[in-house]
Image (cartoon, rainbow, N blue to C red; front, side, top):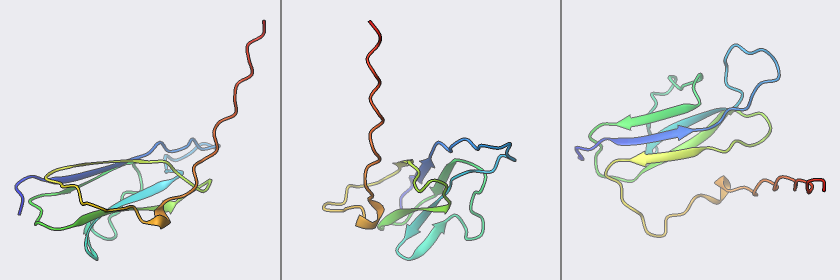
Length: 118
């Protein structure tokens, strides 16, 4: 196995809630680190329901094809942008693609601002 940890971090900006909240997430995304069909992280049942940044750390990973899965536990408004960063002894896999099911239409562009008054 590798002596370098495999680390993956998922982060998103959770939308504001319209009412006073107990701090619960509006959009709760889950990061899973998988090796084939085996879920390595988090231990099932110990998903993070509080934070909008989640990190998976796998010490001394064996050689293999790991992948990340992002799923929404709760999602208001239909979509949530997020970012993923991965560090460790990783290699580019030629011709690897994101599953078509993960790709959606781009959100509409924001409206143009009117020109300033003369």
